[in-house]
Length: 271
Image 1 (cartoon, helix red, strand yellow):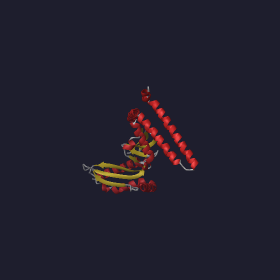
Image 2 (cartoon, one colour):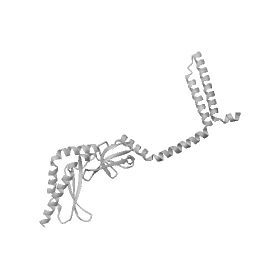
Image 3 (cartoon, one colour):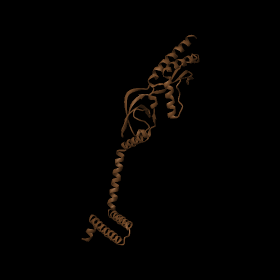
Image 4 (tube, one colour):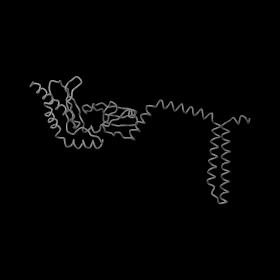
């Protein structure tokens, strides 16, 4: 009978808990009453005894239920591992969201590049980033909407292209054969480029300075640059660098391309 009662862990736990708590209350009450009569501050002693009794109770319970606690811990660990494996992608997305919120590499409305994708940030939540895709070669919206998981924001470099939203350092190259010397008309081509950029030159100068001050770097502009080089196979390359409003980049490129062709064929016809 006694053996069966001792094997009943629930009953033993309740009895020990009642005994320890009762002893604690009796001892602490006795100390408080005695301290009150002698007018001595025994709060430290009472607090220490309370902690000792509480720790003893927890230690005894742990020893009684150690096997069950160990099994429960293994079950919880296996359950947690299973949950982590199943929800790993969501956890990574949430970490990416925290990274963006804390570091703020971009804001809603900014132009950014993540990997090979460029676009305007439309929205972001704890799962994904929504981007309105932009063709960076002509600075036009493609009409496509990209939904990018936030975990890519942690593992992939993020480029903030926001200054390209208004003004862009536009590069383009025109390749021709070596039958004409481009230095014969390069000065006239520069005059054409300056004339196309004259109406926004003042604004371009100010915006160029703002970008340089913000990024603490020197960028090309605001005046147009034209260089002459050769390709790997010996063809002539005319390289243009124009600092201009983003929406006018393709317009100016087309005009300069037409001017170059006119100069090129005119020079060729004289030979």
